[in-house]
Image (cartoon, rainbow, N blue to C red; front, side, top):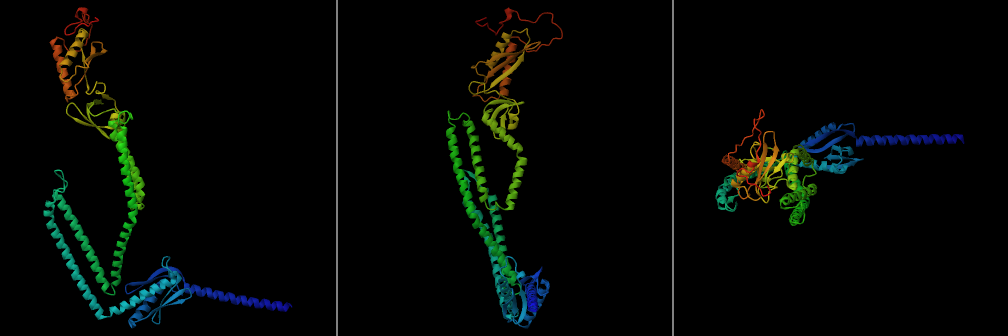
Length: 542
């Protein structure tokens, strides 16, 4: 019994050893046929690429396989130009035969990730090899080469004719352009103003025709070269690659245009919707600006409010339409957007500050067009309150452009707000000694104001004693100018000062501000009997 068990164990061990040996031999054979990954090498025959080897097969590297296959194929083609190309499977690989010779083996590792199956790769390589065999026969045929040369000559003649015809058409169009532009020059006008200068328009059209001429010339040259190269077997791959590149380019452009149409349609729809909403908001704001609706929305603030609402609507529409614009998802478009945003953020700080200051001036109604104001050391009539600057015309005929941020950061005196109706305030200051009756000074200043053309009688001019200094009192004359007379304030003040001097001279009062270094011999005062010296008159309550 023990001997039988021992025999069975020996027999089982022998069978297992044989099985493992057979499996190892099978694995080695598979590795030898399928190969291992190595540096790629290209197999190129007669200017055509048959296959790119990637695997070390049967001990041969890709470079050695390509060299051996090239030698076999060239030797076979030299012996005969009529050879049959076939494909036979070998384990997981395929053998490409040229006649009765092994040209090369296509292994699984020779197939790229996007190259399809091993059989498809082998069939494609075999088809290219058949084309090489056919072109080798054509290259040895004198008749075929003569026909190719004849077709090339005809193509060259046609090419030269097209170039000459294109050049002549360009010259003819340039000759017809001046009379055509002169005939239709009235169409290019708005009223009596021409939209374009005919000389500049002629130059623009000439440049466009020149550009079109060179584009056609390049296209004709490209097609001629592609046709001629395709006539001869050895240069045929170059011609085919030119045609493929051109058609791929055209296909890429057409596909890009077709793919962009839906996005452009959506973007255009968004912009049309934004235009409608902008127009609707404008009409709503115009209705709401009527008196009694909103206090802050008046005829003055309607225009900037409409612009702000329209700007907000269009910015929102641009943000919504941005993803649908062609090329918006490309890195170049994104980089340009980031660059523009960075430039705006760095350079628009002062611009945004000026704009915000303009909005503050508009909605607080600090200034209005036509008002006479004083900003810092500048005074004049406000001509326009813009978004970034305010234009002021001085009494000397100067036009000042003041930044809005300067106005909001300084004290602004408005001489037109306190007046009744339109117009502005005119004031001046004089200092007279204490020995001159103040009633007389009041009367003389009011008389000088009445003599000045442009100063209204109602409300009547007033005189205020603004200070009692050590040596003299200070008198301020305040009057209102006539708004219907566009006389500059500086000119009006000059006339008022001249009349003040005349009135004071008529009544023998000197315009001086006395200063004392010692006590005078007699006290400087006005006795009651001189209180109402002409032109002063006593009031009813005195």
